Length: 366
Image 1 (tube, rainbow, N blue to C red):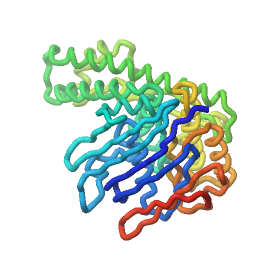
Image 2 (image 1 turned 135 degrees about the vertical axis):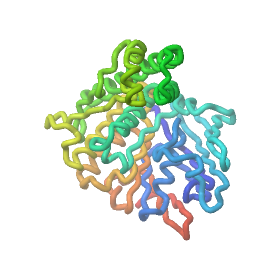
Image 3 (image 1 turned 45 degrees about the horizontal axis):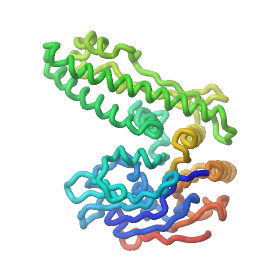
């Protein structure tokens, strides 16, 4: 199978890592070490080889190592389908993030053309019971994995909506001020809706076609108010109501992702903590399976502390599915025993904290 993999990774003044480098192959990488040693920082660096703000959504200056605050840099050699790419992304203190691919400056969207990276982090464990914003973000990350230009549509929509909301708060009533903004929101909003629906359809089909140890989820895109096909007209008709609220009340920014544990016919928000985690893992695996057909290779998976809440049988099942996908997965845990079921199918790295500096040691086995 054609693979997508990080073959080399270098970090400079990134979070707790002053200098670090790893030579890797395409097998899963199990990263273990004490809490606070810098394991998640390593995975966050990999997440920045994809468009966006990474798995923690951190600000540019928050990524730099303290107290030096010199800025940071990540380098990677990425094997993507039949090609190998050199990627550099960095930011100097107080400056925006920069990117070079194969020694040429590039926009972040270009990363989406050469790589697909999915992640599951502990903060997502409450996804089904917290606010809709987190579920929209999860869905949009999934959607971005199928359609890299989805980010442009979201940014275009949000920029126009911010301007419209400013007019609403200032009680501007002249329709000429709104027309162009609402046209931009309608055009981008239509793309957002279509992209999200496609992503849900891809996940649904991938779940239906697979035999998995993890539960299937029935997914639906919902909203407090139905999002009309003619969003431009609806926005114009809704100005008075929006003005009273001081914000835009209809559109894809109000959408929500609902999930039902299919075999039990129970809403995800009403499931146990373990069942909610299993549903998330199931969707990540379904996303990966769908991308094999869509992109041509399984994505890189970043699974932070994924084994902590799984029993040995579920852990073994997860590792079996990752290996059968042929995916390079970065996984973290506090001890090597959490990865015993992987055996020689994986590569290993130990991370320790040494007086505030993270140290990485690659290991052939545990």
